[in-house]
Image (cartoon, rainbow, N blue to C red; front, top):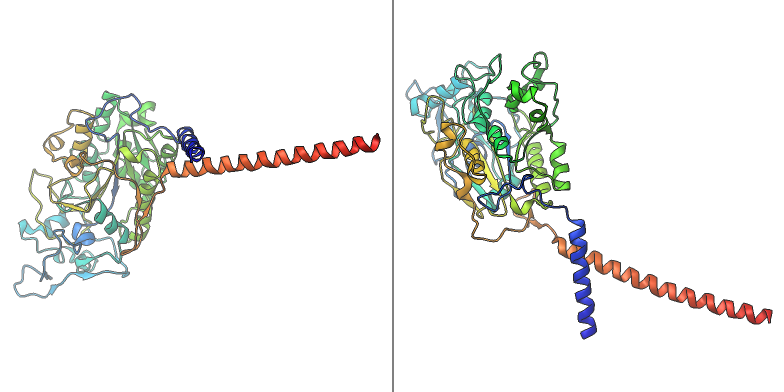
Length: 456
C-alpha cells in the first residue's frame, strides 16, 4: 500500500508539473494595475436590433409581455382592430424602422400603444413588430439566462438608432447632439472610456469581426453595408485614434480575440462588435447564437475564465414591441429595453436582475473595477453591473451550455485531471518502453553468447 501511495503521489506531482508547464499564464492587466474585485477581464459585445420582449418576453420570472396584450392598429381611432403578440418561429422578417421618429410614434408620449401604427406608410408590415421569439428559437440564450444573469430593466441609452447608442457604449454621450449620425468631421475631442484606460495604463482592445482597417469615417463612401463598420466602431470616426499608430493598433480583427485567449494575452478590457453575425434583421438569429456561444466557450476554455465577466447586449430595440415605458433621463434617453446578459464565474446563478441599467452601466463597471474617473455625466450617474456579481462565492467552473432546451450542460473537463491522465499515460509508456528495452537487451546478450560459443 505504501508503494502504491508513493506511485500515486508521484503521478499527481507529475501532473501538477505538466499543468504548470502547459497552461498559459492568465493575462492580468499587462501593467500590473490592481483591480477592486477579482475580475481582471471585462468583455463586452454589442449585437443589434432586438427588444427585450422580442427575445425574452415569455421567459419565466422576467417582466415580459403582459397577459391580454393587443396593440391597436390605429391608436388614434378608438375601437380599431388590434394585433396580439405572436410567435415568429421561422417566418421571414424584415428590418423594421428604428430611428428617433419611429421611437416617438411608438412611445406616443408614454401611452406605449403605437408599435404597429408607427410602421404605417413605411412599406413594412407593422403587425410584425408584435412578433416574438422564445426558447425554441433561442435555446442557448435561454440556457445562459437559466445559469447566469438576465437583466430585464436594461434600456438602450438613446431613443434612437445605432450611432447614438454605440457612442453611449464607449463615451457616455450621444456624440452628435444634432442628429443620429456621424458628423462629417468625426467626433472631435469627445472623451471615451479608452482614454481613461490609456491614462491609467490599463490594457484594452476593440475586436472587430471581418475588420477592414481601410474603412474609416474618412473613406466609408461607396462601401455599401461595409461602411457600417464606422458606426459599430466609433473610434474609427476619431482623428486621434486614426492618426496615432499606438492608439490605432488597439483596433484589431476578431481573430486576435481567440489568439489572445490561447496565448494568455487577453487585455483587461475588450470591446467586440460583429459583422455578419449581428442578428440584425433579416439576419439569422441562429447564426448570432452560434457566434456568441463560440465567443463564450472560447473564454471558458481559456485560463482567463476564472477572472472574467462577459456582457452582451443589443444596440437598439429594432422597431419591435416592448411593453415597459422607458424612464426619461435627459433629452436623448432612455430608449426601449434591450436584451442584456452577464456571464462570469462570479455571476449570480439564474437571476433576473431588475435594476435599471443602460449601456453606460458597462462603463461604470469598468470604472469601478479599475478605479477610473467617469467619462461623462451619464456613466457617473449610472447604476453598475457590479451588483450582479457575487464575490462571496468561489469562482464557478466553466460549463459549456447546450444549444437545446431540457438537456444537460457539458462541464468543461478539469485541466488537472487531464494533465494527470497525461502523466499516467507517460509513466505507463515509460514503463513499457523500459520493460521492452530490458527484454531487448537480454535477447541481444543471449544471441551474443551463442555466437561466441559457436566461434569457440
